[in-house]
Image (cartoon, rainbow, N blue to C red; front, top):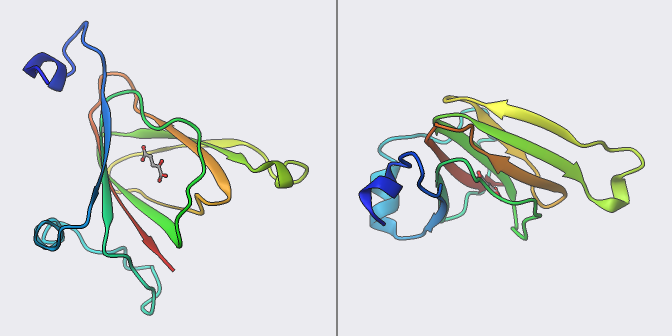
Length: 134
Ligand SMILES: O=C(O)CCC(=O)C(=O)O
């Protein structure tokens, strides 16, 4: 990508990337910089892969995940808007909602049963670390 686009300079198309890392050497380097949220259960099972989402503006389109565990996600840099919607089976009792996270916030969401989309406020660069637990 040209440097102007990397930096999301005026007139450039924004970009947003989700990177699933499963390389053990990279994982141990990344884990020097964060720890698993302390409020997760001591006996929780964690996957070997973690995801890093970073970029500008666009975020993720509305979708459900097909993952084996519950998701947690820590906001590291910038802020992010989340839009959540129930699956059709729950629409009579569950409602759409939205929330906003800032650096230091941790989201716990069952992304297998709640549709979710994200967007980054204009002008901000968002970095997020995500994994799963059960
Ligand atoms: O953090 C994001 O922008 C997207 C996260 C997501 O789509 C997911 O956890 O399934």
